[in-house]
Amino acid sequence: MKKELHIFFTCLMFYSRIPCPKNISHDPEYLNKATRYFPLIGWIVGSISFVAFYVSSLFLSTETAVILAIITSILTTGAFHEDGFADVCDGFGGGWTKEKILMIMKDSSIGAYGAIGLVLLFLLKFKLLSESVLLFTNDSSYFQIYLLFISVHALSRLAAISIIFTHEYSRDDASSKSKPIAKSHSWKEVFGSFFFGLLPLLALSYFQYKILLVLIPVFLTRYFLARYFQKWIDGYTGDCLGATQQVCEVLYYLSILFIWKFI
Image (cartoon, rainbow, N blue to C red; front, top):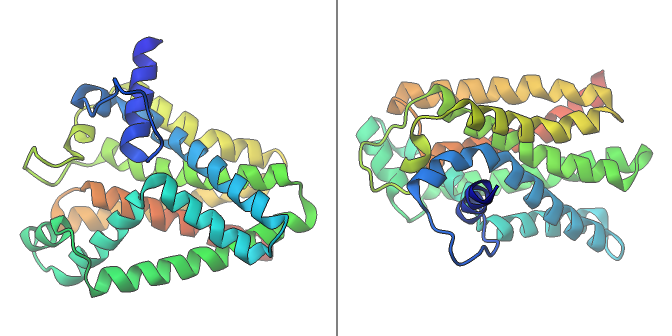
């Protein structure tokens, strides 16, 4: 149990800005095993984001509450995944070879592709989340909205982390901060990821059974993104995982609106 707690806090420290015990470090062995808890971090981020939304909605409009919820999630993770999305936009937008793409993604500065990509990402996320929340507000309780928040963060993280189970890490340098998570994985990492990634969605499906259909577009998106990364850089990087998480999060909201309108 003590070891599992250490692994969990290692995951929490790596993927968020939430304070952890002082004895926790980025130990490569624990970081490799921490993938089993990555979707569980989505529960935490989604819960904190929902609290910001709920409290704000008591005094402000739904749209403003959604903006504050998005800001809260970004502060909780330190824009970890958004930064990866921007790097992927810059790298794949400006590079035409594997070496050039990887070099651009490793640069800490943001370029035009990354800036434009983030603006469009946040516009989509704001609009789609606002409309999704309104759908649940019309005929649901706040508990279902809470499940919506944690399920989208958990499932999108599952889609991202599952890439490491099927593809190889692209960079050869061991200095990369994401290198430790790219090592071999046991059934515990795979089972833990899928358990924590799918459980909130299954809970929400108890109230809204058709919500399970979001699995199709989310994992189709994950498949094509992984295939695209494989084609250009022979695998993935930490930035690719962050970009996958962000894109799948947006696809989740978009899928909800499509399902509620046409099914």
